Length: 328
Ligand code: PMV
Image (tube, rainbow, N blue to C red):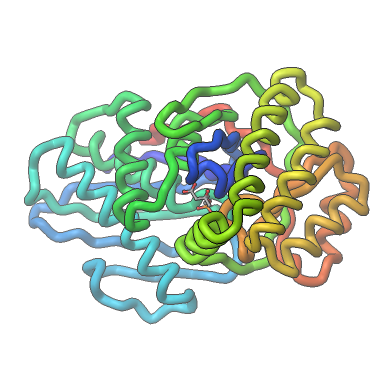
């Protein structure tokens, strides 16, 4: 058996706008998905996962991807999670040229599903890496990132940026603009996460922004303004200017909110963190529900979040310098 892990991420800046060619800056964090892959003697795919979330969803699943497991998790989320594993295994088969190889796949994840922390990208990266290694091939990081992107692209019906998968494969803070992906120097960031226990529908949220952008010029301008925030953010990151990063994150959240992708619980958590003295706070990922990211050196934001109605979990996250990790 080969086991690989890959980290989740937060968007410091640029989600949604990245879909329209603007740059984005995600940053890998030390919450991981670990995937074990073992070759079978037949051509079946068996997926077993006891925990695909920090809180709430426990998935016990064994069978082919089209069987429906009896679990307490929304069907669309679970189908999506299983879809990423299927897609990743297709990539493994493509690399090795063996279409008939079967696998037992075991997933353990500390990353909540669909909550803006890049769970699907981490699962795809770790599964492709472990699957190819199980068959004797170790992929270069760039190819691994590209194949994980292809998995997300296929599963999400052509709506995906390279941001999540590149960040999860390489670790650290990265800059993604179209197909140009590169690593950035980043200071140690005092990252605090708030999680509302829910999840947004990425496809629906992306479609909503697309519609607004087509209907109103000012919505298209808003998307472009997010790109300007990202460019300023890169500068602040290079200077290690946490105060400026926080201000820009606040601005970014305001524009995402204007584009209709925030929610009451995300806004409550953002305001709780700001009121507690955080340098800044914003939603991360597609929005609609899920997680916010705040920058706060003290414990105040985390404490305030733990008392905030609508916040189910809060924790401090270290920046993950390493992306994919070859565990065994
Ligand atoms: O919620 P997440 O982590 O899947 O992030 C979605 C980010 C979007 O920009 C909205 C879509 C994308 O593929 O970049």
